[in-house]
Image 1 (cartoon, rainbow, N blue to C red):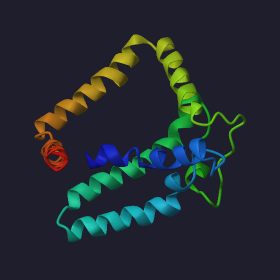
Image 2 (tube, rainbow, N blue to C red):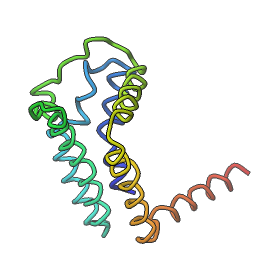
Image 3 (spheres, one colour):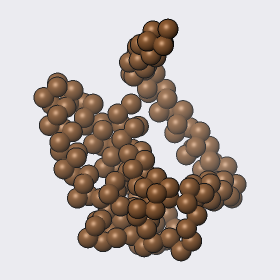
Length: 163
């Protein structure tokens, strides 16, 4: 659960601040910055070890840092060079968007993704978008579905307080 949530943290921070509030000229800023991610990751590891939850904190750091690595390496898929500057905010700010679409940028990216998905070989689609998530879910279930009990307790607490 920590890995899954942490892998979204950079986008959950930067995209709303850029697309929704216009605070940054692109979706790569404070949440994607190695200058923020490294101390945050080290702090999470320290905090997790003190609470005897080291594996949860390691999962968080792996999720957060691999998101940044993926953003740096992603251009290779299209035959371009890696973009180390994406994780060096504020020293190296990402190029601003040519067109400000606000929150509609997310819909534009979804449209681009679906168009790319349609043109991909079916084996790639099955492997990347069906088998990999299915294997991940199977591993999560095999591991005892961590997080379900916590979520169930939280829902029960909210329900009891609302009554």
